[in-house]
Length: 269
Image (cartoon, rainbow, N blue to C red):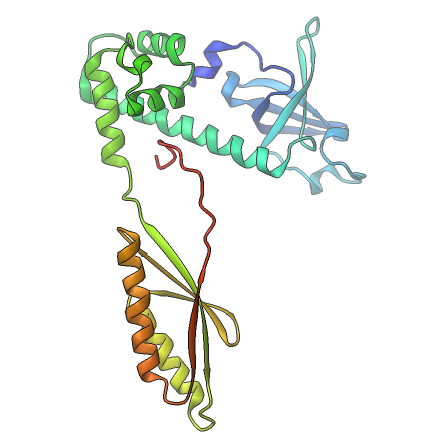
């Protein structure tokens, strides 16, 4: 797989986050390969593996492992690069892996679009145009999907651009709307209360609502639909059944706030 960033820079910049494949572990650190930069070799010093004292480096990393590192040193004369694992936060690691995986998926989408559109020309030539205009697959797709001026005036063939958008739309999963409630469920029936609760929970699940146990007597009810109204109706129907089956006890719900994730136009790929 050919990644565009490999062609734009011969080496990564100091402070840049990189995907590193650990290829060999030595006494004082580990040698890694950077797939985004034509598999150039860099060194991860043992002091940059963890903030704490390291007795056995193998307890922290192993050969074949993929990690996110930060470039901390570059010796131009010797051509050596050092990276750090401990200087990367959990969020930085997650975001970097996400963007790396997205570029791989878009790389595959680009390959598919070239085959489907059958536009004359080489992949390398199209990638050179893409690189000079957008810098990455991700930036290219954002411009094409949003219909920006840069996307409309791109030197990439119109047929190729339209094919990319169509393939994206075809592979995009349907958006689901989710609602969540906390249900309090307790029975005063001393003889068959446990069985009664089981029947109520089963009936709720049959209405298409996901039931997750929190701690007695609380349960989380999660429902999803093509719109919020559809998701809410599932909850209301489930509660009506639960209340009708509760002979002696408490059935109550309270809506739970769900943190909204900031969406990207191409995150779903």
